[in-house]
Length: 363
Picture 1 (cartoon, helix red, strand yellow):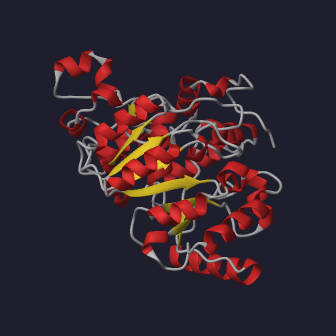
Picture 2 (picture 1 turned 90 degrees about the horizontal axis):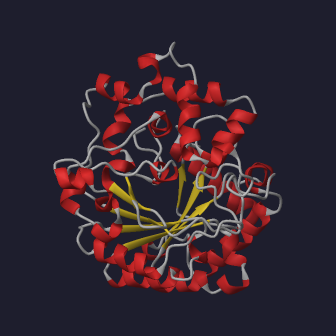
């Protein structure tokens, strides 16, 4: 497994436009609506994909990470140095105060490596927001991070942890040798301070990504039961809930799909598995995503493809890109926008659907 990001390797696919071009070049003319996402939406009764009331304020603190995972849609790695600065974090907080969002979803990279991470969490908790930390688990073992489990518990932060599988081979295959053992140790530390034991103030959520080209299992309850049994019997680990997320065909996952000869088949699977019941609950409808440099996006995946929000209903806003930066945040203009879509969006609408909160459609 590579230890360098696409960016550091100067890969063609480090360029978001190259990723979009590759996805658009796939011949899907034999599939419904020829694999055009907007046409598929319209055939399902949605002339435009527009936002619902804003509930989740997602902040990506940067691309710096202590890991380089095969499936990472951020291209995060130790060689990335992009990190949100304090003025941009303060601009996020000022924008948050203009909304009725109940949840702040903090992600990265490894968000904990941002020097202003604790400040942001404390400020959000003081505002009465539910705070989610998207944690890769291994970061909790770093010498400067060992106090984080207890600190999270004190503040009532929900810890949402990436763990591809409850068995070692599948996890290490996707995230690197030794990752599973480190993840188990980090989970033990979280359990030791009360996480994963049914306390809503100390909620421990595990996130699973398929380790192949399949979609997440439709039997969510059965899968969660299997994971709980496996982690308890083999490691005496407990957690509260399991969510499964599809691997998006962008960034490093896109590179792997292309190099392994699976790109055509995976895109066909996503298009053929399109489920109109997922549209209303798509995360891009109730979430705004802020990048490390303060730009605004409809979702974390659009952020990685640099597909910024498109504002409507105000001619000045249309002509001035500054209205798509967090320092000029306008809830009114954002509520009028049409969400930017592309072929990658089939990843969120396939099967039961996929979002940062797991499946969308009811079982």
